[in-house]
Length: 159
Image (cartoon, rainbow, N blue to C red; front, side, top):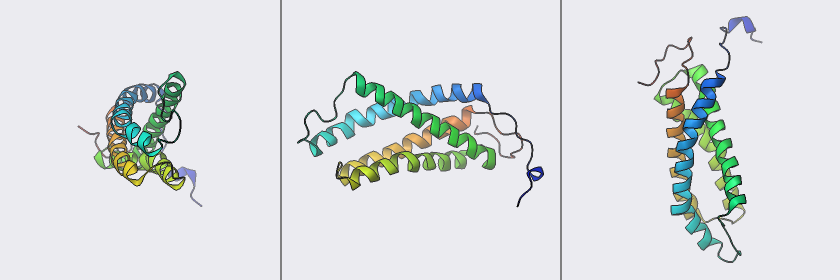
C-alpha cells in the first residue's frame, strides 16, 4: 500500500482556467463536428439508412441533443487532458495520448456500437473515426496550451 505522504501536494483544481479552456475548445469541437457531420457522415448515414423515414433530421431537438453531446465531449477531453498533464506534464506527447484516450472513450465506442447494430457501414466509420481522432488530438493540444502547467512537472508547456 502506498502512503499518501509519498505524493506531493497538489494545487487546487483550476476551475476558472478549466471553464475558459472548455469554452475555447468547444468552439473547435463544434466546428469540426459540424463539418464532419454535414459534409461526410450525414449523407453516408442517409444513404445507409434510406429505409428509415426522416433519418438524420435537422431540427431544434436534434441540435439541442447535439449541443449536449459536444458539451460532454469537450468536458471529457479537457478534463482527461488536465488529468494526464498532472502526471506526465504538458507537452505534445501528453496531448496526443490524452486526445487519443478521449477518442477511444467517446468515438471508438460509439462507432463500434453503430457497426455492431448494423446502423452504419464500415466505410462511414472509416471516414468518421480518423477525422474524429484528429479533432480530439487538436482539442487536447489546445487544452495543454491553455490549462496551467502543473508546477511539480518538469516538462515545459507547449511553446
